[in-house]
Length: 184
Ligand code: GTP
Ligand code: MG
Image (cartoon, helix red, strand yellow):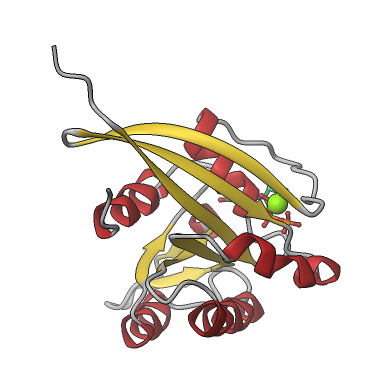
């Protein structure tokens, strides 16, 4: 009988406060969503095992706090990270700026081989508006998909739009990261 080896994958969640970092992890790990999730203090550690093709991957996730007063703790968590999910909120333009500054910091200071995914969360808050024109208009959105995608391409990041609330795109973030990491 063949027993699959478990590969550990150390992953970090960063991004501005309240963009939904903890909610994305909670969706991935427990398939749950909490409407009024409390802010993370310091960081939370969660794990999740996944099958990917013939491998078993154990994600070891540091979900860090976005509040500025915790920023100085971040290096402790990204030092050994193989991957990072940098989250912003598609309904909040400033959160993409914050995400970009996180990407810069990670690319300068973290493991040089780190795989970074950019995740635009809360797409459930974006509503299509039928204004009779050909190009679709959306209400609620402050960060156009194409703008974030172009930035991700230029910076060498994986790119996703997600809804922790509905579950859209969440699993892809983690499985696409796992596919990009050479597992021993
Ligand atoms: P910090 O820990 O303070 O850095 O925040 P966070 O990034 O972990 O955000 P958190 O997951 O705590 O979510 C903040 C708020 O946004 C909560 O009230 C969530 O319910 C809500 N939220 C998170 N993800 C989504 C989403 O995909 N859609 C909607 N509509 N709300 C979301
Ligand atoms: Mg949190």
